[in-house]
Picture 1 (cartoon, helix red, strand yellow):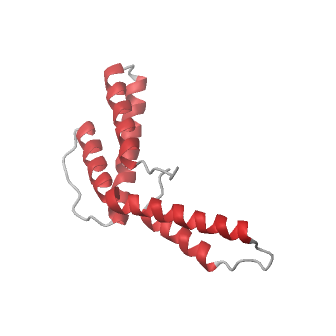
Picture 2: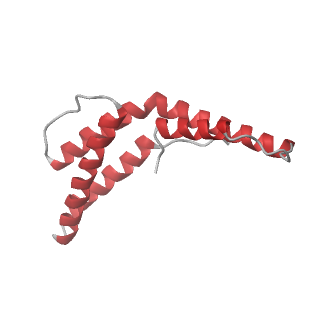
Length: 126
């Protein structure tokens, strides 16, 4: 699962809100700062390309399923809700292709899964 920007930011908020225990030493504080920095890096990547990835993915699924339509509400909540429904239909189409032993259709669906994963990928710092 690739976390969405709101999830990443909530993680940062929680980490900042929890007070450090009195026995927290330098290593603990450094680890916490590193975690917050990592979350900021993930948030930056998701902010940069998250909306475009969702719009592309929804369109690609619709195209593979032979459906028309486009997203009109570009809020993340609306895009993710549409995506969840489209993914359910894609999974059903994949199950039907497997049952029918339609290898061409299965290959097309698997290729889409790979492209979707690549579009949503977030890179952890080295």
